[in-house]
Image (cartoon, rainbow, N blue to C red; front, top):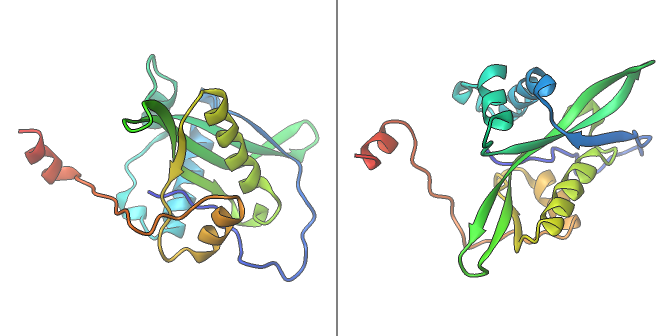
Length: 180
């Protein structure tokens, strides 16, 4: 899945900014993350691809050598409580040309009621700052070509959308054949 900021292209009325706390995901966040990922899949019309459960996700994010990491955005929900309203899931990759690691953003999502309030920007900036602190040479992600609001958002954040690269993917039975 490609990361999506899911922000409206223009807001007719400026919404009040919501103070969100960005923090590293913890095992207790697995069910909330699954719910957010399901909402992302619904937005992208890809729910038929979902196989994740909180247990499967937790094993990959919080195991001995986790292949991916996540941060969550929380807002004050009730006195003494918080609601998880967004997330960014990313992993380390490597650039042979730069001889440096990079961070690849797999997914970025904010619930519809919380879009346009700076939460997507805060999540993206947080992961970008991690890339800088870790000495990464790149911070990259993909965006669906039909998601113009996300493309506009990423460009406004300073990202370049590369027109001449295509994603190649092998899954399922084809992957099994590749492995033989």
